[in-house]
Image (cartoon, rainbow, N blue to C red; front, side, top):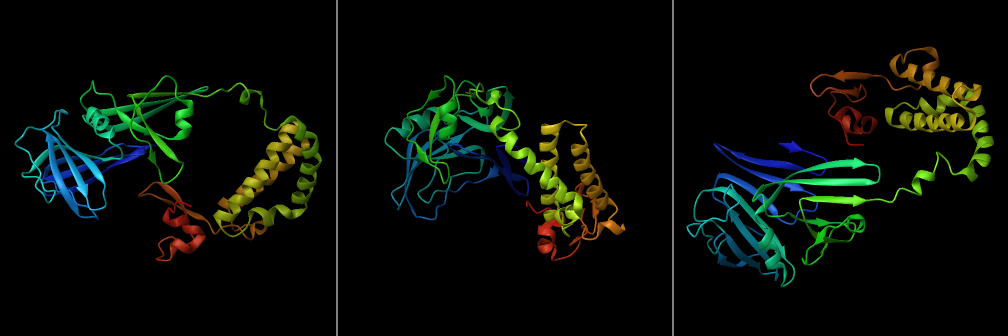
Length: 325
């Protein structure tokens, strides 16, 4: 029901009731906003213990030796009172409206840290970028005064400026190594841009080497080689050819200037190629993709190849199916 740069809101709906899950990269807790359902915690491994810790807080253990902290919060972020309980099978004793949160306990000290930040629920995430500075602003539900606890990758940790690191046991992510818990509703990451700002389009030592090679490649394209490069039957492979010639044009512009004859000859090739995309039937356009449609329902341009066909996923790498390729 919602999508952003760093996560989504997924919603399970029933008649007059729903559960909304804000799912974000690096979240410490799995959270669900229940409205009208009776929660039940299940596991691929058997739940062997559900122990009440205090109002709104339980400890769950499974037969794999894993412990989890379970929290039930009112809509305002307060812990629920003693009338709400979980039975031994992981099922709550009543229909629930509020937040349910679950987090893994990896070390003895994790319980205290997780309990301290359980009332701050991540629901959105903004990104701001300036020269050399990246800012994450987390939005949350629950207690406004409770700082957010969120996992950071190693590259985040190296760049963070004056952020408070938690004592939470680091988590080994499926990719990119260990993640550490960071406390705070805003992250500032500073990048030293001094060396990067000294770079141009090319390293200075490469320009003299590449200029004659660029002219050789331009001559090859001008001898009709451009057609076999960018008129390759599909948008996928033709697009790769456009990228190749486009990169050559940028090099020539860098070496000789925008208005130089070499640069203009190269850009003329791109003009001819693009013309074949929107008028593919012209004599010089053999091998161009067969064309495209404007698809009004989703508002996009899709290849005619495979459009409306049950086998469209194999046609032009699924272009007509909005394949992520």
